[in-house]
Length: 212
Image (tube, rainbow, N blue to C red; front, side, top):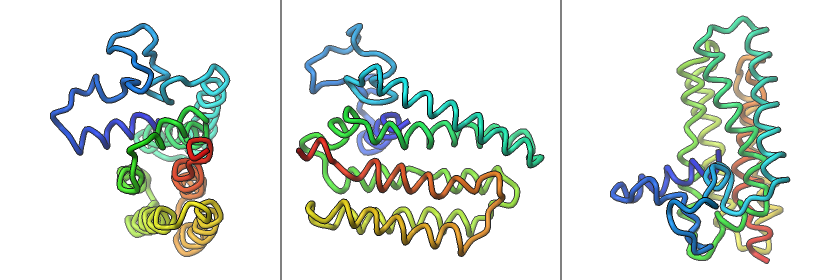
């Protein structure tokens, strides 16, 4: 989910860095291989609570199941259904993960810059994956969704901290116009663009607890 994409981004910046080191919670002083380094440290954030884990994975599985049901009901081919299942799991779970206190403290820890956050948004190329796999989800729609998310992220990260929250909501509201009214996508994936914007602009880019 969110942590995996953050690890991917860090590895792209420094390919020589061992992948095993990317998700290591160095801020807690834990050694690589420590039993406290669990899968949830990598999928959510180091130090994620039991409640955060339950809500995040519960939402991810529920969202994926409902999205698959919509795709199957729409008669989409097996490849499209499989891709939708993976994308839905990531976005539904990621929207919740990025809003957790643990993820806020991790992704907005000291040393993180606007470049890191824009890079996180940029690696979300799921619109183009859907355009490749899902009949009726055109490349133009993919470009509009991706461009809207990235443009809105630029506006949010360029805003001074006191105004960042209202600007994030304003950017999300305006981006929804482009992504839901000006492009047409299959009904079975109509949830995709709004959820992507929620995950990236409202959940990930706002520091909240980390800022305090």
